[in-house]
Length: 328
Image (tube, rainbow, N blue to C red; front, side, top):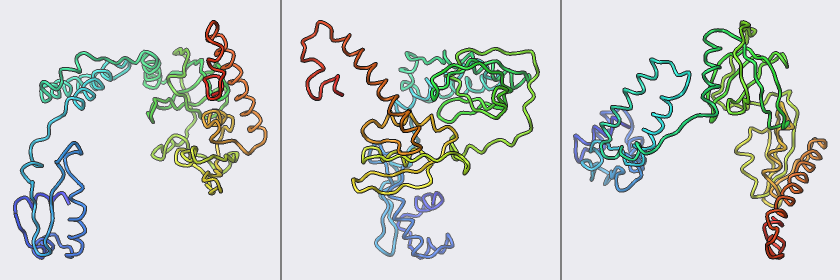
């Protein structure tokens, strides 16, 4: 279809029969492609979509000059790209060759963006929480050395100390380290922004020979042997079926869903229950459902206590009337 655009630009009013023959397709296939082309263009900022139609015999392109103009970065696009490039170039642990290549590309981008790049010079981003951790992990991988971690687990709400043999760094939304954990004697994945403390050890890293996971389908990929969890959600919680891999999602009479999924760590779904609030609940296993209710009560109790302190000296109706802050 890209070739078709170029072909039509050079041949105004081309006959459908000739174009189909040139591309080795049927006239019906060509008409189908022509129905798609008007939804394409350089962006959706304005009238820069392809204005192409046909009278059944010939094909007309009404705005080839407008769409074919050289692309220019808008101010917001240039700013976002330049700020991100400069931020990444400051990452500790970034290989010097990569850093220099990025800086050269950034300089070219600044020159191409011209005045649109001005705003980016007034913005900066730093990676204070992950930068040092990233550098240590990257060094441990390259030098084949073991790491000591103090790591926060949100599912258990606790800090644990462990030694790990790092395998690789990767990013899926956040930056992660895949490693062989000597505490659990199993492969584990650690999110870098949850590493509270890290030390590079002199002991050599020696993870067992294991096949790297394919992450193209996402970080969480449940296995058939993982425990089964059933969650019922109302209409406001239907997003769960889109966000979490699941075995089934049955429609409920109220417009909600009964979602059955598997996870190696069912306790981690307590956070999901708290996030859903009145839009959903854990049905099974029973122990997880009870645990989620207790976590909700504790959160509500802590909130009410904080709300009571913050409203000291305020009018008594604040936060107490129906629909008020405390009630919510």
